[in-house]
Length: 531
Image (tube, rainbow, N blue to C red; front, side):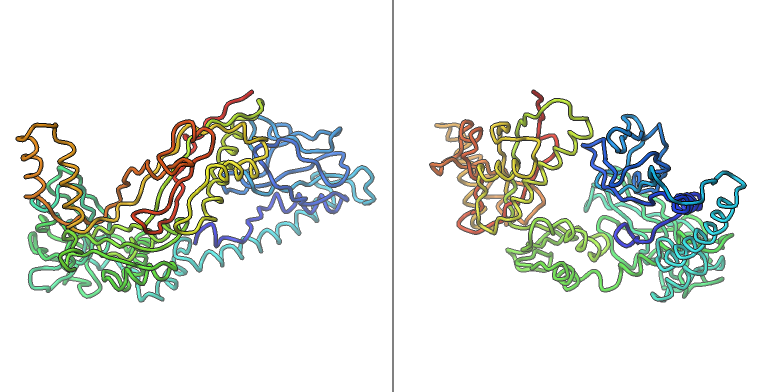
């Protein structure tokens, strides 16, 4: 369950009663207004004499705001005025206002504690709030993240997962690093299968642990599997020695102490982790699974490198690289999908033919905008650049002039294009690797150019180093600087004056091929100056 699936509303008892009493006495209930952090005054749709309550969301939590602390009612403007320093709703969310009209015709006016109107309102409100609570509980019981107890048992039973009782033996298994293979961090996932030498007893890791760089070994908690339930899971020290799923960089395992029965059964949290592991482990660890994950995200694998590939497409043991064709806005989701299906201990690299560009600019605006408003304005500038970039097809260059027009059109506070001064535009290309012949030639040329002129010994040494170490390069997640792709009207590398004037273009053709432009912009790249 996540923010996209949670659509039910949590209506606490005091809020339900407040809505009922406001309606019974002739007021307006739940007038919806969208909050914008750049504004602090919000007019009501009907004349009001008093605001009874305002509710909304703060950090995605339902909140009731305090009168005269978080907000005020401006009678002259007939509007809600949010106070600086008070609690405010989340930006671009809806807050709800209950208020009274000047000429209410309701015969009910006494809503004090103990009055008939309030007593009836509280009685009805309690039933309504109870129904809301029960509906939410029933809804939450259908998801692994929020179900508890028996409800969680029923949810995970779909995956044939059964809660472990205290009859499952537990212990610690020590994982040892192989320094000859890996010296960096090694992650040991939850759910890795282990066993004794002959397989009489089987175990799984119950927590994810990371063997840090420079650390020779690490202890990982394990629990007996369903097949080794009961006394079969109690084994002597040193009995657990077989790692059934290979992890790159791990040379051996052992348990220094005997396993013992746990005092408690499996908790809800542990059961959730194990169920997720089972779900994520379905159809993993194969190239077909990786290709299917890419296809499910509406992308295409154009090339791949793995340890079993041909000589020019081989990657290091324990690694796999995929060159995909997809739009930049889907790339992050594609990375997550691939990581979810990759084999434990295997490093996956996902790359695409992208030209990344980063505009840096100074934007002049009118003074008086709040700090939160400035943050939002910078975000709107980045969104405008992103929306313009998304309209470009593969191979189509980005125009500096069109980029400035898109910003001014989307962000009205800027006013005019003259209020934007481009300071710099940086560009990179994805590292998609090179075939051996091309790599070899490039390296020779770079070595010859870098050697001191006239120094024969230095030139021979530089060329010898390349000749003896030449090998095909596999893709990486690194970015290669490509400032020459930022060009002026002449087609040459853009000058500072051309960038500042906005007459530059960012090209999307690399070595004659159509690549896709991707925006790489951060708030730090945009400086707001006030006048």
